[in-house]
Image 1 (cartoon, rainbow, N blue to C red):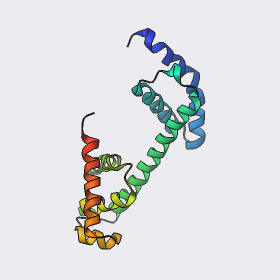
Image 2 (cartoon, helix red, strand yellow):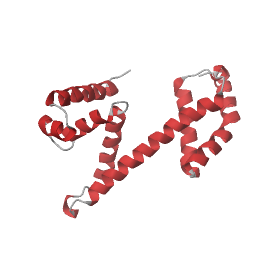
Image 3 (cartoon, rainbow, N blue to C red):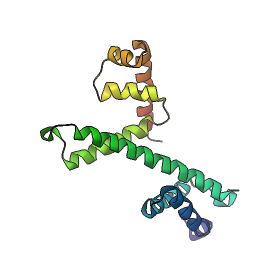
Image 4 (cartoon, one colour):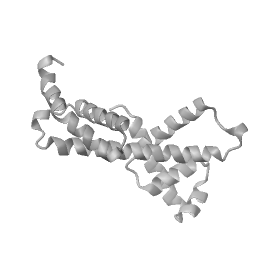
Length: 168
């Protein structure tokens, strides 16, 4: 990108970074997470290749992106916490190593990201099948739906996973 193309973005960043950092820090109450979120917000603006001169309400625009990132951060932490709580129930001999735990958490985040946007019941059916190894009949009984409905849920979830992995 030529220097002349980056100048509006540099001004946009310098004009709004301090405000965004303070705004996010008020929500997160953690300077380090706020700095990460503010930086990630500007990275998303850069990746979207938005002409910042056309943004009519820059603070609202940045705030919306930051809120989405904060929500994702909280969702990831809840997912991690639930997984770690389940690990604590395992006998020590069956517990994964720290390296395995890290890889499993990364895989959980990837699955969660792939399934984002799907209804909760579809996610539940998919996870019951893939993680718990339940049959469609067992899933149907637990969710109080027919096997055919479970099959439709699985088709939706698998399609979503496939589309999230497909190159764009």
